[in-house]
Length: 196
Image (cartoon, rainbow, N blue to C red; front, side, top):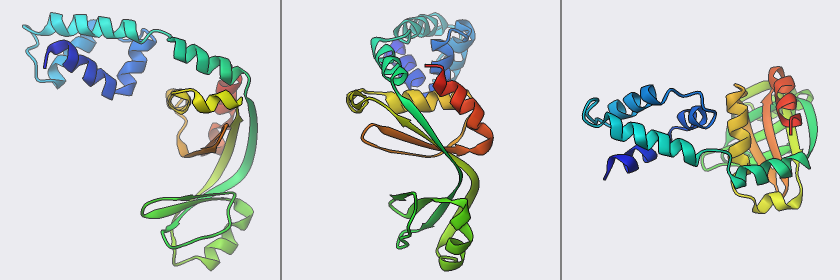
């Protein structure tokens, strides 16, 4: 495999580096040294090839038509917020009434109102694996074209990651994206999503 392809594949797997490149805050020479080292390439002999590959890759990351389409749709979206929620992870065989109930391979996740927590904790005490309180639901309701638009969830989760907002649960239905985050991050999240 040639150096250009190796470099591109490495950068493709490391979203934080991609974002630094896309936002033009990465030092290309330092980036090339890091990539060469990580790929086990010669820091002297292969440096310029990796540097050129990094620069070419940066050109492909500039604001794309897809990103512009996502932003245009997000500008037409509406936001709803529901606070005082908790996330409960339960054993696979457990079923309970919840605002959102997500079935996994080995566990199930329930999003409930905090006011129901004690009753559920008492009823399902042997089935509960984890509880996280102090959560908020951010519901993004978008035009129906969002369903056919590639990369929306990836775009939104990268925005949250850049703002250091942890998404505890991400789910959705049709044209609705639901992000479960901590109460302390709601102001940042709303500012971020209102900026479209």
